[in-house]
Structures are given as C-alpha cells and as structure tokens.
Image 1 (tube, rainbow, N blue to C red):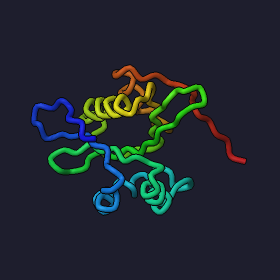
Image 2 (image 1 turned 120 degrees about the vertical axis):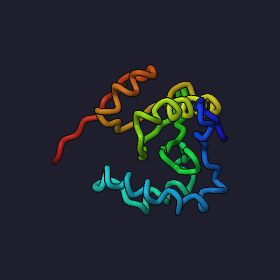
Image 3 (image 1 turned 45 degrees about the vertical axis):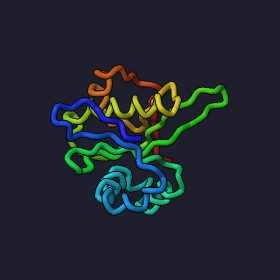
Image 4 (image 1 turned 30 degrees about the vertical axis):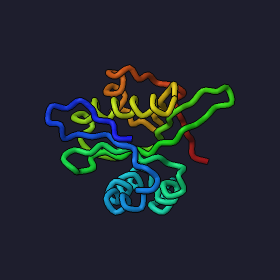
Length: 149
C-alpha cells in the first residue's frame, strides 16, 4: 500500500512494503535496523529483526522523502479474542521526528484503517515523543515498567 501524505514538495511517501519486496529492501534499511538494535541492545539483534521481517511477523512501514528512507516502523496486527484489531508498532527508527511527525502519523492512521484496525498502539514510546504524539490525539495507555532481578 502506497499512501501519499500531504506535503507541499510532493516528495514524501508513506508505504507498507509488500512481503515479496522485503529481500530487496533489507540492504536499504540496514542502517535503521542498527539504530533499532542500538536502542535495545539487551533485547534485540539485527538477525532477530531481519528474521521477523522475512517471516512476515513484522510489517515494514516506511516514510520516504526524495527517495531516502527517513523512518522505519515495524508493525504487526493483533486480533484480540474480543474482535478488536490493533496495529501495534513495537519499534521505530528514523530521523526528523518533529519534521516528519505529521506524515508518519497520517500514514500510520491510513494504513491502520486500510487493515480494518480500530486502534494503533505504539510500544516503548520514548518520553520525548509523548507530547508530539499527544498533538495528534494519542494518549498514554498501559504504561510499561520493569525491575532488574
């Protein structure tokens, strides 16, 4: 799905990478996968992420500006026993968080609607992103906590 987002330069596109094109995209997103691993080095590896992408567990959502991949979101659809369909985004990496917030948010919302999801949930959202996302109507839902044992 290629969802054109509002942008006066017409250079910004938000896409969901089809499964048949995943292998061709991997070399183009390696630097973003490395950024993801750098955020959570004790939890994920490059091989883990690549395996989840190739297996189809993760859907690759990308924001492209002038043919440069500026944001990569890994998502999956969760169908709850109650019938609720969620688009869950457990991890994201990119640049220009403020500059690209509007087209990324619009692309995510359009994709979620196209997939018949009634909610989008961002997991492991960094504190600095909270006010940015709140501007688009996002709210905090089930904060995550941890303790070392």
